[in-house]
Image (cartoon, rainbow, N blue to C red):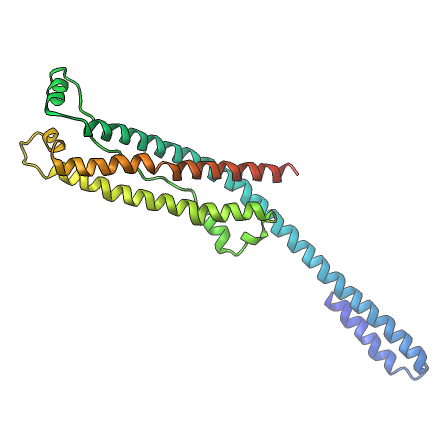
Amino acid sequence: MQDEIIKHSKKIYSEMNNKKHSFKEKAKEVFAEILIIVFAVSLSIWLHSWSEERHEHKDAQTFLIGLKEDLQNDISNLEETKKKLDKTQQQISFALHLTPKKIDSIKANHQQIQSGTNLINTIVNNGRYEGFKSSGKINTIENQNVRNEILSYYQQTIPQIVHVEASYDKLTSKYVDLLLSGKEDEDINKTVLKQKTKIILSGINDFTKYNQKPYEDAIKQAREIIKEIDKEENK
């Protein structure tokens, strides 16, 4: 393209210095060469822009296809965490209603007392998203609804999950510390019966009961994003 512009520029210069042509002839030739240059430059810019848009569109589509897999894995992990919260809530609720008589009865029947908690640490597959966002390509996702949902999921919904799990960890750590604070030969089940332990257990019970909604919302949102991506693929 640069060679073509140079060639036509030389023609303009040559024509301007052509003593055989009249001013009218020179103007006609120069104008024609200028039109050729303008057209060539405009065409070059358009082709470059078109190629860039195609490349960006392809990158966005590749990202969305990969993101579907990430979201499907997230859904599995979120559902697993939700099950653990359910299990913890059941165990804590059981522990809250323990009495010395119930403990003796359970022991007499050689049954195990489930009064513990479950570790939760939801793995979120956000590496692909973070890489795409940091490259400045997030706006290449043409569907604004899909783009906004993705941003909302990773910047609002997932941080809320992280906050819930950090709070859960602090709460359950207090419970574990209490269980371990007794004497070495002390029956751990007696610690569960203490008033201070009951207060913490009550807090964990309420927490696990009322903090399952963020997981339900995250799962729902991830499924909606997958559905929207599928629609884009089928266009």
